[in-house]
Image (spheres, rainbow, N blue to C red):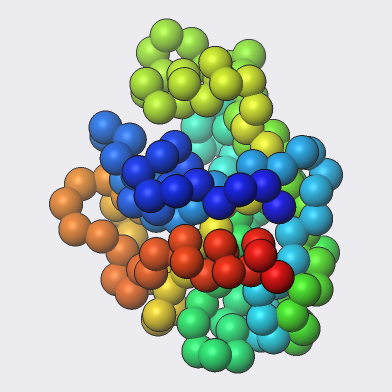
Length: 170
Ligand SMILES: [Zn+2]
Protein backbone atom coordinates (compact mmCIF):
# COMPACT_ATOMS: atom_id res chain seq x y z
CA UNK A 1 0.00 0.00 0.00
CA UNK A 2 1.38 3.38 -0.93
CA UNK A 3 1.23 6.38 1.35
CA UNK A 4 -2.14 7.50 2.58
CA UNK A 5 -2.74 11.06 1.29
CA UNK A 6 -2.51 13.68 4.02
CA UNK A 7 -5.54 15.93 4.62
CA UNK A 8 -6.02 18.46 1.81
CA UNK A 9 -3.73 16.72 -0.67
CA UNK A 10 -4.92 15.05 -3.89
CA UNK A 11 -6.89 11.89 -3.16
CA UNK A 12 -7.59 12.84 0.45
CA UNK A 13 -10.96 12.58 2.15
CA UNK A 14 -13.38 15.39 1.31
CA UNK A 15 -10.87 16.92 -1.12
CA UNK A 16 -12.42 19.91 -2.90
CA UNK A 17 -12.42 19.02 -6.61
CA UNK A 18 -14.13 22.24 -7.65
CA UNK A 19 -17.40 20.72 -8.88
CA UNK A 20 -17.35 17.79 -6.42
CA UNK A 21 -16.05 16.55 -3.09
CA UNK A 22 -14.19 13.28 -2.55
CA UNK A 23 -16.13 10.81 -0.36
CA UNK A 24 -13.17 8.58 0.37
CA UNK A 25 -9.41 8.20 0.15
CA UNK A 26 -7.45 7.17 -2.95
CA UNK A 27 -4.62 4.71 -2.44
CA UNK A 28 -2.54 4.51 -5.60
CA UNK A 29 -1.02 1.12 -6.36
CA UNK A 30 0.29 -0.52 -9.50
CA UNK A 31 -2.26 -2.33 -11.66
CA UNK A 32 -2.97 -5.82 -10.35
CA UNK A 33 -2.18 -4.97 -6.72
CA UNK A 34 -4.25 -6.87 -4.16
CA UNK A 35 -6.85 -5.12 -2.03
CA UNK A 36 -7.52 -6.73 1.36
CA UNK A 37 -10.25 -6.35 3.96
CA UNK A 38 -9.49 -4.19 7.01
CA UNK A 39 -11.21 -6.48 9.53
CA UNK A 40 -13.52 -9.48 9.74
CA UNK A 41 -16.89 -8.85 8.11
CA UNK A 42 -19.60 -9.85 5.67
CA UNK A 43 -19.84 -8.85 2.00
CA UNK A 44 -23.16 -7.05 1.55
CA UNK A 45 -22.95 -5.94 -2.06
CA UNK A 46 -20.80 -6.23 -5.16
CA UNK A 47 -21.67 -3.96 -8.05
CA UNK A 48 -20.56 -1.74 -10.90
CA UNK A 49 -18.77 1.41 -9.77
CA UNK A 50 -17.65 3.05 -13.01
CA UNK A 51 -18.35 2.09 -16.60
CA UNK A 52 -18.07 3.66 -20.05
CA UNK A 53 -21.86 3.41 -20.29
CA UNK A 54 -22.10 6.03 -17.51
CA UNK A 55 -19.17 8.27 -18.50
CA UNK A 56 -17.17 7.53 -21.70
CA UNK A 57 -13.73 8.08 -20.13
CA UNK A 58 -14.43 5.58 -17.33
CA UNK A 59 -13.27 1.99 -17.54
CA UNK A 60 -15.46 -0.68 -16.02
CA UNK A 61 -14.69 -1.05 -12.31
CA UNK A 62 -16.52 -2.54 -9.35
CA UNK A 63 -17.16 -1.90 -5.68
CA UNK A 64 -17.46 -4.22 -2.72
CA UNK A 65 -19.44 -3.12 0.33
CA UNK A 66 -18.49 -4.90 3.56
CA UNK A 67 -20.15 -4.74 6.96
CA UNK A 68 -17.24 -4.86 9.37
CA UNK A 69 -17.39 -6.80 12.62
CA UNK A 70 -16.94 -3.53 14.54
CA UNK A 71 -20.19 -2.19 13.02
CA UNK A 72 -18.72 0.17 10.41
CA UNK A 73 -19.16 -0.23 6.66
CA UNK A 74 -16.21 -0.30 4.26
CA UNK A 75 -16.58 0.36 0.55
CA UNK A 76 -13.69 -0.85 -1.62
CA UNK A 77 -14.08 0.72 -5.06
CA UNK A 78 -12.42 1.14 -8.46
CA UNK A 79 -11.53 -2.55 -8.47
CA UNK A 80 -10.98 -4.10 -11.89
CA UNK A 81 -11.26 -7.61 -10.45
CA UNK A 82 -13.42 -8.81 -7.56
CA UNK A 83 -12.65 -12.03 -5.70
CA UNK A 84 -15.64 -12.16 -3.32
CA UNK A 85 -19.42 -12.39 -3.59
CA UNK A 86 -22.33 -10.98 -1.63
CA UNK A 87 -22.89 -13.11 1.47
CA UNK A 88 -19.24 -14.15 1.83
CA UNK A 89 -17.72 -14.00 5.29
CA UNK A 90 -14.37 -12.23 5.24
CA UNK A 91 -11.49 -12.45 7.61
CA UNK A 92 -9.17 -9.52 8.17
CA UNK A 93 -6.54 -9.25 5.40
CA UNK A 94 -8.51 -11.46 3.00
CA UNK A 95 -8.23 -10.50 -0.67
CA UNK A 96 -11.28 -8.57 -1.87
CA UNK A 97 -10.07 -7.76 -5.39
CA UNK A 98 -7.43 -6.02 -7.46
CA UNK A 99 -6.88 -2.49 -8.70
CA UNK A 100 -6.33 -1.32 -12.27
CA UNK A 101 -6.69 1.79 -14.41
CA UNK A 102 -9.96 3.57 -13.72
CA UNK A 103 -9.72 6.04 -16.58
CA UNK A 104 -9.53 5.50 -20.32
CA UNK A 105 -7.16 8.37 -21.08
CA UNK A 106 -7.84 8.23 -24.82
CA UNK A 107 -11.40 9.36 -24.11
CA UNK A 108 -10.44 12.36 -21.95
CA UNK A 109 -10.63 15.53 -23.99
CA UNK A 110 -10.66 19.27 -23.26
CA UNK A 111 -14.31 19.14 -22.23
CA UNK A 112 -13.54 16.87 -19.27
CA UNK A 113 -13.66 18.35 -15.75
CA UNK A 114 -10.39 19.91 -14.53
CA UNK A 115 -9.98 17.22 -11.91
CA UNK A 116 -10.19 14.44 -14.53
CA UNK A 117 -7.70 16.23 -16.81
CA UNK A 118 -5.25 16.50 -13.91
CA UNK A 119 -5.41 12.72 -13.45
CA UNK A 120 -4.73 12.23 -17.15
CA UNK A 121 -1.66 14.47 -16.88
CA UNK A 122 -0.46 12.46 -13.86
CA UNK A 123 -0.63 9.41 -16.14
CA UNK A 124 -1.69 6.92 -13.50
CA UNK A 125 -5.25 6.08 -12.53
CA UNK A 126 -4.76 2.71 -10.89
CA UNK A 127 -5.96 3.03 -7.31
CA UNK A 128 -8.22 1.82 -4.57
CA UNK A 129 -10.98 4.28 -3.73
CA UNK A 130 -11.86 3.55 -0.10
CA UNK A 131 -14.87 4.84 1.84
CA UNK A 132 -15.88 4.26 5.44
CA UNK A 133 -19.35 4.76 6.96
CA UNK A 134 -20.90 4.46 10.40
CA UNK A 135 -24.19 3.36 8.82
CA UNK A 136 -24.96 1.51 5.62
CA UNK A 137 -24.48 4.02 2.74
CA UNK A 138 -27.68 5.03 0.99
CA UNK A 139 -28.21 5.57 -2.71
CA UNK A 140 -28.19 9.27 -3.62
CA UNK A 141 -28.35 11.16 -6.89
CA UNK A 142 -25.70 13.51 -5.44
CA UNK A 143 -23.20 10.64 -5.32
CA UNK A 144 -21.35 9.47 -8.42
CA UNK A 145 -18.03 7.68 -8.85
CA UNK A 146 -17.00 8.20 -5.24
CA UNK A 147 -17.65 11.94 -5.32
CA UNK A 148 -20.41 14.13 -3.87
CA UNK A 149 -22.01 16.90 -5.89
CA UNK A 150 -23.71 19.87 -4.27
CA UNK A 151 -24.30 20.80 -0.63
CA UNK A 152 -24.23 18.44 2.34
CA UNK A 153 -22.41 15.14 2.52
CA UNK A 154 -23.31 11.45 2.47
CA UNK A 155 -25.21 10.23 5.53
CA UNK A 156 -22.87 8.51 7.97
CA UNK A 157 -19.66 9.03 5.99
CA UNK A 158 -16.46 8.89 8.05
CA UNK A 159 -12.96 10.18 7.40
CA UNK A 160 -10.95 6.94 7.04
CA UNK A 161 -7.53 8.64 7.00
CA UNK A 162 -6.51 7.82 10.58
CA UNK A 163 -7.61 4.22 10.23
CA UNK A 164 -5.68 3.73 6.99
CA UNK A 165 -2.55 5.35 8.39
CA UNK A 166 -2.71 2.98 11.38
CA UNK A 167 -3.11 -0.06 9.10
CA UNK A 168 -0.25 1.05 6.85
CA UNK A 169 2.08 1.04 9.88
CA UNK A 170 1.17 -2.50 10.98
ZN1 LIG B 1 -11.44 8.38 -5.09
